[in-house]
Length: 232
Length: 232
DNA sequence: TGTACATCAGTGAACGCGCGTTCACTGATGTAC
DNA sequence: TGTACATCAGTGAACGCGCGTTCACTGATGTAC
Image (cartoon, rainbow over all chains, first blue to last red; front, side):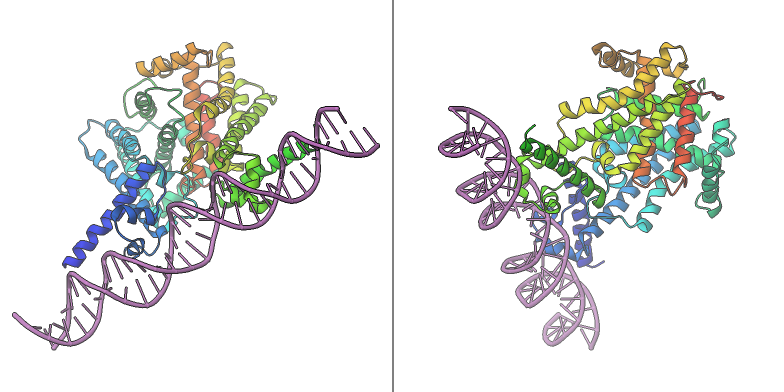
């Protein structure tokens, strides 16, 4: 790697890092090339050596956020755990921890679209699925080990839902039984609902200790899956 | 009411209506006085006769959205229903229907903050609680009728959660047992999680028929509360 | 190792744009007598 | 009912701002011989 390439890489990282920092400071998932350049003490046009347009920078930030979240979840999945339930608990707690640590990144990937910007689905979708796959693979392992408790309502799905999950199974996106995918989706939206409400400050007036609430709900979820002991 | 007052009222409504329409067209919860004035074929400064600043218009839109949602939920609660479960089902289905019919309004009240705008909590909070109160009052009625099934995990809450819910009970914001408030919060975040993911297009790649999925999940929720028959 | 040339990061000036907001004003509507 | 005055909706010009993006350029870095 030449010196030029080396410096280029550093500058490129700095751009993204300052973009994220500014999102954090303003508290909104907004990105402005001019503002970034100003803070870097560079001229704005210089940034066009690194990104063909502002929207391309946004896209990169989205993809990297998805990837970083997935990295964190994978790391959590690899921590030593006594059971599938504990392993999944680690992952799900990490999900919230990441969202709280980087709320603007979370809003960027899961929240409102940025005005005048539309994320190219073919780029963001695979990145988005990586994180979900971490949860699914644990559920799948538990399922293969016969530890997953499938209740009647997990198996008797509405026909339309059944077929669309079965399609996912067939296309091989996830080679899993539809029931397992279903549990994954259920777990995901429940987690997600709590986090979204908390991030946008709708939970706090009701439940003071959102951490304890989250943990209680996740445990209740895992109990209903039969993954941690409990009377469900 | 003088002619002047009458016209003023009409214009004021038109401003809000066009603001909402433009949010729907752009697909983002963004409001611009200039853009509104342009479409009304008025000059932008004229709008300052109606709102002291752009942010005040946004606040009014937020409050009205909360109120309109609460109206819809109350209407749904008043529809004839054979049981508390059916009544609650009507309300919860209406919640999603409203969100899908007016996604920008939903994003405005529950999604990302608008850049450079912070909603005054003392104004928006009461409006936000009205909708939640509809769900709570049905749960409370079912509870008084002894039809609510309280499982151990509904009663054994983490101490911190228990105390903050108990505080709500005491301040009289909702004169309900903590367990009922807890069920309300649980129902709310689950509903909410699904709707948020659907609105921002994260559910569709997994579950094609989001309507059927939503209905199934809500029924499963109501079964777990003992409000509609089912094996839970 | 030295020279000639190619690459390319970064600059500064400029573009057109839309925004929120202010100001002094006009002219229609409403009110007091 | 008619007149004098007060109210106030709406206008047009102007402000300063930040934005994304283009363009012709300078000068440092890298490469081929």
